[in-house]
Image: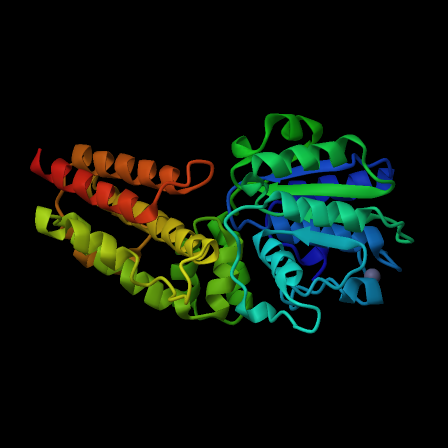
Length: 376
Ligand SMILES: [Zn+2]
């Protein structure tokens, strides 16, 4: 992959190309925008161009060759933890877990990255390790540090990163990536050159999925469900796991529609049922549980949004088009649906950083609110 293959957000690609051609690059960047629209991917592709050994001059501007040894080190096929490019460092919750495991492991022990679970936050230790790697000289044109989900930096880690941003090492770029930029330390934010990403129009996602060989029906449903998140669509087209996740979601949605007092605890229990089993109840298992719940809540919001569309006689706006026959039977007033959506939104906000409320309790509270709304 190279910049020429990047789908959507053309304005961002154009801007980065123009800045690269000019040469004088700001050392700190903030790539913000909705989840899964390609922020992290574009950061990696740009890092690829910045260090490419034989960049191309395409009709659209500069691009990486995608073939030289430097480019090959940044192939998207490599797992995220196998960061082997000497000049590009990705700091994310997975890398933080890896560094922590390496530190804890005894000298002879090898860390098995496939057994690691992402951490809930980016703590001070991750930034310390990063600063340590940055203290060495580099022979590369640019060193690029990509901090993914930068809103997960702890207070302490933010302070340490700020120090680095204020006295940046030579020829080093920092790219902070975030879907919740307002949760990033405001001083850090003010030091960064912003680059905003947008949702990708569904016809562009549809074309991409067709080009990947999906049938028209499959491509059309996935492009609708993606709601502009091109990365989600690409992952879903590769892995059919989204189908079982969606079935789980559908059963929860049906339960929520007819929620009674008897269902409150069962709802919270079933909602967390799809969550992976882990041996220890550590921070890591909490983190992956939270991520899955976030996705589940997003799906429930979308389901209720579809119920609202039906209630307003706007069936053409329904995203989960294959659920339409069932959605039509729901028959809730728009006022009720809006109230449920509001509660879902509140729950979603609560379980995400910086609030990080207890997921189980938050879901129980959501179920209670849903019953109360139904009784009104
Ligand atoms: Zn190259």
